[in-house]
Amino acid sequence: MIKLRFPAAGLAAATARGGTALAFGAVLTLLAAGCAGQVSGTAPADGQSLPSVEPAPDPPPSSEPRIHPRWRSCAGEPSMRPRDEGTDAVPLLRYSGTFHPVAAARCEEGTQRRPDGGTDAIAVENHADDVAALIAALRLPDAPPPPESSADDEVPALLCPADGYAPPRLVLLDAQGRWVRPHIPRGDCGKPLAEATAAMDGLRWTRVKTRVLGEVVSAEAAASGCDQVATDMVWFTGVYPPTRQGDLAPLAADTASVRLCIYEVKPSGRDSEKPQGTFVSGRLLPSTRWAAVKQAIQSSGEAPPCPAPATRFAHLTTPRGDIHAELDGCHRLVAPAMGTSYETIRQAPTNLPDLLTRP
Image 1: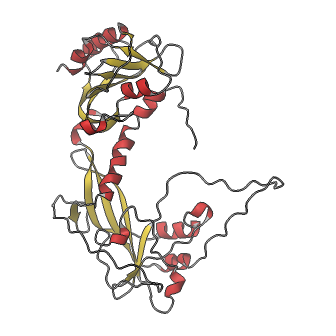
Image 2: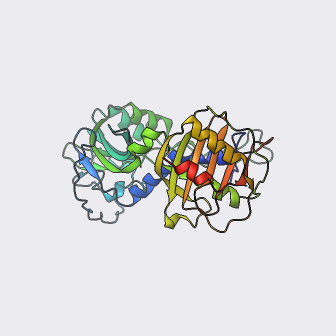
Image 3: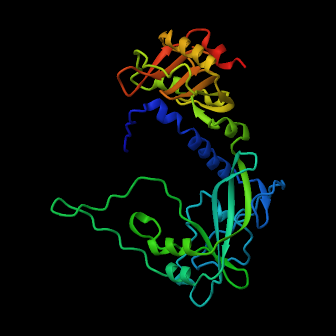
């Protein structure tokens, strides 16, 4: 396992800025749950909701390459679900003489901006014709595995990154509408061969279906400049050893532009050492309000141990670093510390939550 050490911005700031990524991480849950959503034809999602139909599972694969009789859709084929690892894929050469591809379909996930400024997680189905170059690339053999290194080797063995990887969900179709899922030749580290990737990317893909899986960023969060989901960095800093107590670094000027984002933690998420809060409200603070908030933060003291996380918290983005504050519970805050690249956890004064939530 590779341990990361965050730079001068601090652990709390680095983790909190991952709010959008955390929100998008929820997309995987939506995908695994069956991907029920909205469907459109050849354009992006049109907002018409249709009931979800759970397709019947395909029969288990036989020893012979199976040619499926009819392509339904990415949503309608169980073997094309987002978390499928492609175990049913068969090398294209095994279909020689029995299957002649004329088109390809690819199932993918992503995000899509709405007219109101919000963002949805989507699943898309793309089709392409003129697949000759792709077919040629899919017939290439896998790259040979790299030799293992030994103490006498001058060149060390290939080091593969430990990043997550999901194989492309690609199918080939023939003129009768039958389909197969081909094995994609593998290169170094088990990922698709470069020639196969280039051939897939070089096709003229046309989107034929778009399904909305769920909301990633609400219109309100987008308008406020806040992330849809954020981590309660006060609680995380309190439980992440070592808990740091120290003097506050100088805060931003009274006239600085400061963004306030408020989040609520669902009961089911309060048992985690990194509770995740969902966006409630956000805005830029008037300069007079920031001056009062700044004064309250500067009067904070040493924080005692806290038995439970807050149900609501605030995230302040300032020119001198991020500040996080519990709006209930133990009423602590986390802010940049004097003379270090880390943050300090402090006991906030009792008037801070009112200053942050007052209209």
